[in-house]
Amino acid sequence: MHSFSTPAVYDWGAGGLEIIVPGSYRMTGYAPDGSELWRVDGLTYQVKSIPVLAGDRLFFNGWAPGGEPAVRLELPPFGEMSERFDANGDAELDKEEIPANWLPDNWAMHDRNKNGMLNARDWAHYRARRVSENSCMAIRLGGRGNVTGSHRLWRYQKSLPDVASPLLYEKVLYLVRNGGIVTALEPASGAVLKQGRLSDAIDSYYASPVAGDGKIYMLSETGKAVVLEAGSDWTVLQTNDLGEEVYATPAIGGDCLYVRTASKLYCFGE
Ligand SMILES: [Ca+2]
Ligand SMILES: [Ca+2]
View 1 (cartoon, rainbow, N blue to C red):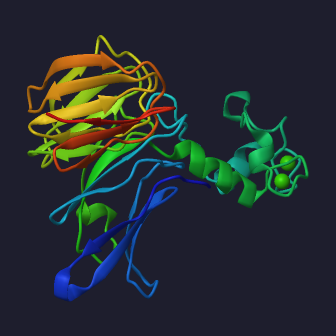
View 2: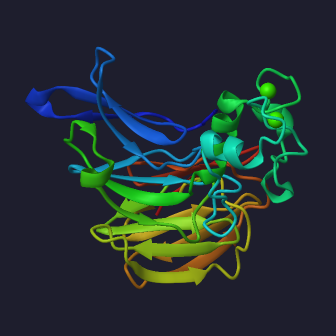
View 3: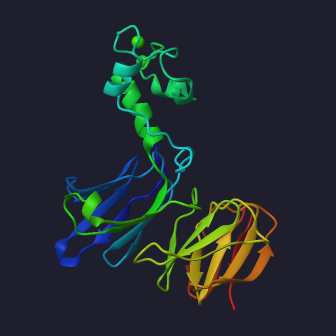
């Protein structure tokens, strides 16, 4: 499928570099020569957030439409589908053979050879997408091979951001979901420390949160700039309105917070 995440580089010092690539359905660690070192399964089909590295831990959020636990579909593999539903026995599933509640709403995307039916390859393409699940997860680095069972430490599946990346700051992991829902997670366990709504900034969030000076900064799509006091019991200190769209993640340099809105570049400092 297609994804929008940016790879990360992990430096093992004398152990060399590792390139970590989040993609559809899996996260993969590569050596600089391109050979695969490890992979973790269970990512959703289309990821946008970037990995957050801390020590030998990696935190990652992946969200795509249809991947919420309540709406995803546990579709059977093609073999089972043919046995149950291929009425005319041509090793293809047509629209009359597939149960109505399992029909793809984007048929053309999955009918790869455009013959009006889904063969085994088409069905695998569709099924992979519909069975995939949104989640925020923690991974322990350093494994080799498929380390989904041994190195994926936890998954959290509620109130996830679509685009905004997680933020790890002073031992708390923050997520901001569209609608202004902020969740603070305990990084070691994935347990929820606090969840609440930014009542003055109920909006979509494309910019990732950033932190400094004991505060968390979240900028919404329409330019609401929320300042939180950081912590497992975070609170809203201030909400300002910049009055126009923000999609870029703010940058911090020295004592300044740089924010780019649709038409301006701001520098905020003491
Ligand atoms: Ca058929
Ligand atoms: Ca086809």
